[in-house]
Each structure stands twice: as C-alpha cells, then as structure tokens.
Length: 212
Image (cartoon, rainbow, N blue to C red):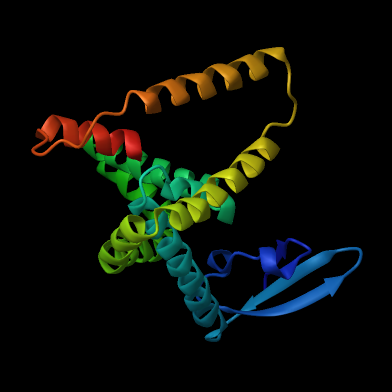
C-alpha cells in the first residue's frame, strides 16, 4: 500500500489526507511518522473527532461574537485556526468568482478542494452558540458587566500575545504602523454614539462587514 509522509507529531496529522482509508503507522527517529494507507473505518472516526473539536471551537467563537468588542476571529487566532479558516473561505470565494465568470469546471474544482468538514462543523458551532447563548450572555452583560468584561478582555489580551508572535521581525516602520493603528482604533471607539433604534439596511450591512 502507498505510504504518506506526515509530521513527526501524530497530533499534527490531518485526517483529510488519508481519504476513506485506514492507516498503519511506522515511526522512527530518522524518518518521523509514516502512514500506510489501507481500508477500514479508522478515517471516519478521526473525521468525527476532528469535526467535534471544530464544533467546540465554533461554539467559543460564536459566544465571543455575541459580546460587543470581541470578535470570533480573536478566538480563532487563539485556537490557531485563523489562517486555515481564512484560507478555506478564500478558496470558496474563488469558486464563486469562477462561477460568476461562467467557468463551471474551474468552480467545481475549487469547491471540491474546500475542506467542508472543517467549515460546516465550525459554522455549526458558531450558529449554535449564537442561538443558545445570546439571551444568557446578554443577561450576564447587564447584570455582571465587570466580570464579563474582564473575561473577554483577557481573551483580547491573549490574542495580542499570539498576534505578536506572527511578526517575525520588528522594525521602525512596523512599530509606527502598530502605534498609528492602535491610536486610530482608540479614537474610533471614542466616537461611539448611542444605539440606533431603526438602522437602515445599509448601516446593518456596513456594520456586519466591519464586524467580520
């Protein structure tokens, strides 16, 4: 049977590369982990475990999205799935662009390359959290604003540390950009007005685009 070269750490193995097949693992210090592909339900169990984990991450993202000032993307960054999420969404958007240009074959090829198990399970968790937790979280925000704000401020602070690690090298230009961005965000938050009773559809669409 064919062998697939995978990372040394078994936890880094993506079940999606194994297809609808089983595995035999061979591990050594010199070659790392190699997986021989055969046929059995091992892959199905791995996919279900991965999907369950993504649903849990989606629940956390949805819960964060309900709270003003906290983004689900912040939680995705903390979980280490932000780049993967953006990549899958970009692939799906590319497929849509192909369909708009009437390139049906290219569009289907793009759609087939999307990791739908990852996306569907993640968005299922997000939607579930929003539907189930929105009322409870709103109540907690109104009754315990300091405690709730402290929890989600901790998420934002942790995401700053994670984002800092994404910058391989700091120079004067990047420091200036960081300071300007922080100042602009602080100034924009100070311009916040009261709630809008009946916002127009344009405002709703704009606010949603900025939030995402």
